Structure formats: structure tokens, C-alpha cells
Image 1 (cartoon, rainbow over the protein chains, first blue to last red):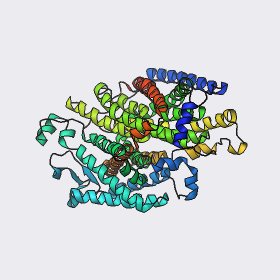
Image 2 (spheres, chains in turn purple, green):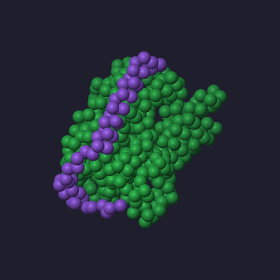
Image 3 (cartoon, one colour):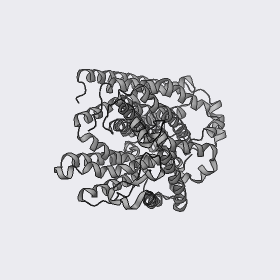
Image 4 (tube, rainbow over the protein chains, first blue to last red):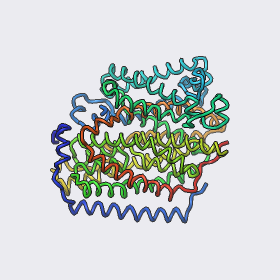
Length: 55
Length: 495
């Protein structure tokens, strides 16, 4: 594992870091994650609507 | 930055002095230990009734007392000293197990306990805490901030913030005992039993809350994470190494998620450490704002408010504690309008949501680790993400929460009536310890939050992602989801 830099180095690193373009695998992760999340949420919301909480 | 955080992410420290146990397991042992001692009351042996409790007061002599009448002879001061001594001995033993310097821990804990508890006592002063006109009349006061007695948490937090920002040397001196994650995990283990007793009378409502916790998982992991990661990468240009722990810290549950993700993607240890410091600072800001917003706008939707705290406030400690403050504020506002809800449900909702989210940290970290080590930074087989990491990263204190919940539920529902009726009082004694661990958590979070240091170190860009994501997205989507799944459900009425 690489050595941890000092905080001053980190500040420089954060300021001057070269842009890393989004890789296809990252786009896939974001896309799948978001779409699965929204679909499941809609499903749960529908279940919640048709089978409301019983008190 | 607390050693507790740093030691979690710097393996070289661990190899220098191998601890018998980690903070997670220690929290399980301490929480279960307190729970078991409290249950002795079921066979008429009161082992922890001496623990100190604080009431709202206008004269100091009214402030403190032992939890159990059987220990009334101790008096308030005696109960406080007994509580301090017991915690000092038990936590110092824990410090030995964690291989920390026990002398330094004991001295630091002494300072931490007395300042934190003094803040709690101040917060219970009638002019700060009294809520109803009847209470004001009882204490002979004409005004009150109406913060409730749990407003004392805010006082503990502010005391910690003062030390962090104006007495940094002192904050450094007591850092050995500044362990908010340990304290809140012990509190959550105890909370399992308390929630079981609360839920026992309304199992249908309790199971409804638990099922709705699933929605929280989907939101935190699949929706929040993806959006925050995208914002950090695309809008702010962060590298993958920074963006992944940052997304987990903001979207899942703060410190533990940032650390788990950092480890999973093989980031340098300093990355999750810095993200964690940011998480703690923003959690403080949220705790100081959101419960009061919830009281103002959600007092007629108490469980929406509880779920919102669980979803929006990051780090276990701040989220569960924010649930406690919110409950206190909302119950007080409703009581002033003549509606008295049973306590425990708002806090229970916040804690359930948080625990549900925590359960899946290991799995999510493994998914990220698998993608990173196989597709992004392809590593040799020996360093690739392995399924056993799911268990390694599983927050073990959840086991303690589940055990106390199941045992509490069994005792309340599955035992003869003469035993069952004693369960609430027995677990109530353990719950007094839960309150004390909350106080220690709040104070510790404050001590970790040195705003100036973070600003001087020039990590404004990290903070900017946090602000944009948290206040522009996470808080509001969390509110919307809470509303969809919890609106219209109210806690049972008291009595």
C-alpha cells in the first residue's frame, strides 16, 4: 500500500489533480445503481400505497 | 482527529500493538453487559439502579438522583460519582483490551465525563428545558427555551465544539477518550432492548416500520451513492480514490462507510480519514439544525421526522442522537397541544433506519471493491476483493442490537405476566446508561469538530461537494422518501 502523504501534499494534490474521465465501468455502475434504485423505490411506493401500514 | 478514527484506517498502528478486540466487539460486550445486569431486576436483584439520572431543575438539589428508589440513599452526588467510577473502571478495561495507554485514557475520560455530564445538567436547567406552562409554573419561571431535557445533548455538543475550536491543546490532551463511535455503538446495543419494550405493545406498527427500513437501504446505497459519486467525479473533478469514499461518507452512514469503502477500493488510509473528519463536522451542523426544522414542520408527522433523521443525518452517533432530540422536541410540542404520544417511536424509527443502512455496508463495500480491483485498478489476485471482506466489514454492534431486541421482545411477550410487567422498568435502568453514552457521544463529536483546522488546511473543495450533495440533494430526497413511506403513521398515544 502506498505511503500516506502529508496534509500539505494532499492540499496540493486536491488542487492540481489531473481530471480522470469517467470510465465505461463507472458509467455503468452509476447508471445501474440509479435505475435499479428508482425502479425498486417505485415498486415499494406502490406496495406501500396498495398495502398501507396497519396500526 | 481522534485516534479512534485514525487507528481504524492505519494498519501500521495495529501491527505495532495488536489489540485483543476491536471497538465494534467491545461495544457489543459493554452493551450486552449493561443489558444483562439490568435484567437481574427481573429476579429482584437491582444491580445497576445506582446509575445517575437527571431531572429538569430550577434548584440544583433537584437535578440529580439514582435511577432506582432502592439506591435513593446514595443521593444525586453519590449516584453521579458511582456512575463515573463504574464507567471509568469498565471503559479503562476496554482501553486495555484495545491496547491503548490506559493511564492516559483514564485521565482523558475523567475530563470528558465530567465536562459532558456538567453540560447535560446545565441543559436540564428549567429555563432551558421546561416545556409546558404547567412545568414552568412548577419551577416558578416565566420563560423557557423549551428545548426539553434532551436539549442537554446540544449543550454537550456545544461544549465539545468550544473545546475543539478554542482550546485545541486540551482537545488534543483528551483525544484518547474521544471515541464517539464506541460510545454510540454501546448506546445502540442497549437501544435494541429499549425499542423491543416499546414495540412489544404495537407489533404491527413495529413491523411496519422495519419493512419500511428497506426503502432506506435502496435510497442510501443505490440512489444517493450514485448521484453523489457522479457529482464528485463530474462536477468537481475528484479522482476515483477520493470520490468513492466521499460518496459513501455522504450517502450511506458517514465515518464507517467512508472507512469501509476506502479499504475496499484500496485507497490510501489518509483519504477516508479526511472524509471522516468532514462527515463529523457536517453531522454537527445537521444535528444543530434538522431536529428544530422537524419540530417546526413535522410535528404532526412524528415518524416522518424520525425516518428523516435516520436518512439525512450522517454517522450513527449523530443520526440516532438527532432522532432522540427530535423525539423530545416533537413530543413536547404535541404535549403542549394536548396530544401525548408514547415515547420511543421516533427515536426507534431513526435508529431502525440507521441500523438497516449499516447492515449492508460490508456488501456495498465488497461490490465496490470487486469493481475497483477487477476493472478499475486491476490488482494481483492476492489483493483482489474477497467475499470474506463482507463479514470483516460488517458492523458487529448490530449483532448486539438484534440480540437485545429479540431478548427484550421475548421477555415482554413470552414470559408470565408477573415477569413481563417488570421488563420495562428493568430495561429502563439500562436505558439510563444509553442516555449517558449519548451524552458522551455528543460531546465527543463536538471535540472532533475543529472547523478552523479544516478550513485552514484548504479542503474547501471536499466541503463544497459535501454541501452541494447534502443540502442540495440528500436532505430533501431523504425527506421525500420519509414522507412517502411514513406519512400518516403516528406513534401510539401514551397511557
